[in-house]
Image (tube, rainbow, N blue to C red; front, side):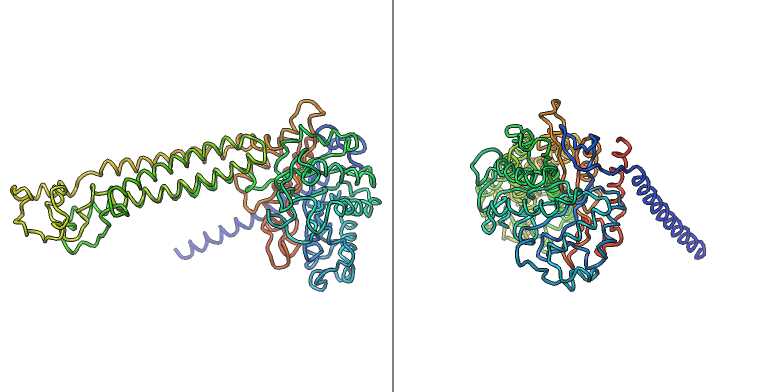
Length: 599
């Protein structure tokens, strides 16, 4: 038997090794096939309807990856402390990407900017030590373009640091430290610096426009301080004055998620920006209303099911205790309050009404949030998330209140006298006929008769009272929770369907790719998307990319957010050499291969 088990273990190990070898060979074959099918992009690029075309007029697709770090306080790209620059550039091209999105900060190229810790940040690239952050970026872009990669510059933030939230002061294109003039000057400066390199072909002029302490951005209204469409037009025109061949990549509103107002103010139809505008959006799981709602519903579902199981368990335990006569003995271990958490029946009724009312409010919030999600405005998006959160909170509080009633009142009868230590049989049979202080009398002190003086209660009657069926209130409360669980299950299943996901994306920005008339459509770049797990959202976003003409840039190449901090979405490990998860790279290469074959 021992030898047999050892043989099975050895066979399993052999099978695992063979599978790993086959996967590695498949990845190598896929990369080679992509490289074989690859056609170099004929620079410069321009737009035509919803397409990006090269110099020869051929439709091209941008498959980019984000390599970041220069926009942060370290001032240099992540990974340069672990691997030589040339090796990382070669590795990036070998994966099949044709483009790299490079974030930077205005502070990085300001006068006097220095790398804070060059010996550690550039440990694997000693030849870069002693250079300024901008000079190091020059070397990075040069190394990437030598591999045939197209570069998209991205003004990620003004002051160096991580992005993004509502409180970092970087939500608009201007901040308290860097006004709009400095922002436009930065765009012109960076464009001029790389104008001699034709493969620096696009400029993402600002990252994730969102509310800031300086105002809430709008599209086509609100004045110069908050009108992002007007500011993007000014910034884009300044870039084109320096380099007329640049693609102008314009962020959507509200963390780069909403392009609803573009038809009212279409930048791509501006004469000064003609055939140059690409809109960019960001997509993560937490930016999708229906997937955020699924998370809320999931935890609320588990909470409600737990309450039902707990109440059923207590009911079963109480009936078991009663069947053994435990309630008629001072040795009974079960102790529950006589009332539902309050000191009077009136308060108990209030608790019941409040619980049912909150449940109704929760269901109403879910329905209203779902309807708001179909409206493409910043206010509607924020409102849908807020109402979904409010509905979850109301449902949780309601469930707690109903659970208190279930466990404290409705399991064994109206006031649960059977659970009181030292209760008499007459209290079970006729609790309304007994005074409150009679509950303290020991069993048999009244001669075994009821308060009306009738004959002693028989053992069969005691068992009938003890084993009474659950009260109508209990069944009512249980029905409310079951109804909630059924509704949540339906919502959870519905919100996970691809058709719902597709409809939400189309409302927010996908409509630009599906307009019938050329002038109503425009190219869209998913400037950031990524995941740490191969979840349902990941399946949906890849399917959407396959079925549309959208361009994309995966976040991210590097395996570290900063030295010592893991980037869970990264393609590479923190050593900047080995692939972190092969499934992620294989999925992206699958997108490239399909698009190559279609082309």
